[in-house]
Amino acid sequence: MSAVEVARLSRVVGGVRAVDDSTWSAGSGEVTAVLGPNGAGKTTTMECLEGLQRPTSGTARVLGTDPWRASAEHRARVGVMLQDGGLPVTTTARRLLHHVARLHSGPADVSALMERLELDRVADRPVRRLSGGERQRVALAAALVGRPEVAFLDEPTAGLDPHARLEVWDLLRETAVDAAVVVTTHSFEEAERIADHVVIMNAGRVVAEGSLAEVCEGRPLEERYFALTVGTRG
Amino acid sequence: MTTPTAPSVPSGPATSAQRWLAQTRFETATILGHGEQLLVALVLPVLALVGMALTDVPDLGPGRRIDVATAGVLALAVVSTAFTGQAIATGFDRRQGVLRFLGVGPLGREGLIAGKLGAVGLVILVQLVVLGGVAAVLGWRPEPAGVLPALVTVGLGAAAFLALAMLLAGTVRAEGVLALANLVWVLLLGLGILLPTDRLPDGVAGLARVLPSGALGDGMRLALVEGGWPLAQWLVLAGWTLAAGLGAARWFRWSD
Image (cartoon, rainbow over all chains, first blue to last red; front, side, top):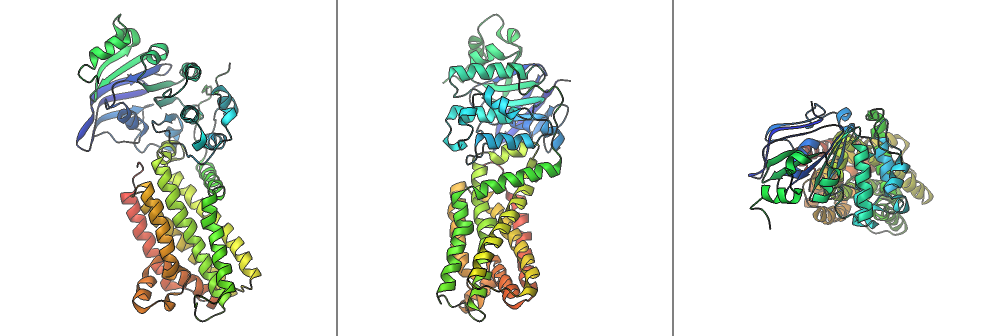
């Protein structure tokens, strides 16, 4: 069984079918990149997998468990980085990360994680005083501090400078050695550099899924993407 | 380079008690480290206490003035922390996605609520000690028989106002919560918190007595000034807790 399984998932929000009969999976030991235009249903699918939204029909399974109203035991095995960050802005990065670590029984080394993401220099500033890229790295650290078996990361490198992006890519590859890492992204370069498995969504549906080579069919990912999401460009 | 997150031994949640205590500690430190919250929680109540102790307006009715004023100021402290502070903090946490982030982690929604209860309780304890100390210097002598019923009144008042704070914070946009929570705080000062309801005009007094503000303020005065057990006021506060708690459970939205 795959660590993440989405089976015939649909989610209707306010009369709009945000996710429409979507099926894909993500395995442990892999980075899975979910691509698609804005409004394709990526974030809605992620939120169903995180237990934030309940599917209208179909199923979402993470580590064999229905994430909706899942137990603390399950939630501790899953790391989440939300698109809007979800960080308390009055606290410092150091305090927040130590707090999140205390919610787990065997967390990562917070100092090493901050050093790895080059956060130690800004760790004692309130989150609201951090740049967008720094906040992004704090949110990523908060998702990984519990040493998750599955990590859902919504656009983890959006707004990062090239150096930070490379460091995050390395960290995600290393995390994926023992975990299933699922990232949403708009970056073809990101998908090509770190993904083992690719899912392309368009208008709520999965239009391609497979290894990077399978999805690309010998052509650049960008070309395949535009061919598969035709009609939504611009 | 080492991988700080490698799950060589699977990680799990800390125990429920550890998670809830951690969240209580985190929230308490956030409140006490926040200048605006401290202003509302301690500075303004101290100013109100000193102002009422050193002047003879407004008329607080029968009883030693400092005793009546202190009971009202302790009620004000409860409202400041359990209602105004928590409504605003929760409203902005909801806006910023903090509730969603912590809710999907091992803390969960139940842990968020437990942490709020713990933090509100601790901060109110600090307020009671500080304000009680200032009041004692100013000559406050509470009725010993009223200490226990006063503590029960504080607990019930905190529960009612925290439930109202969650109802407001979970249903209104953050800017609206900020405006309404401050407005309500000001309005309640005159609706039974600092001013006894029997000092209010007839029509208003009846209304104030069934509001949580009147019940909390009158309850504190009955306990600490007269040593009585404010059973009717407890009933009002329990009713508001139940109604607002059910409303919050039904309508609270975790996302903005």
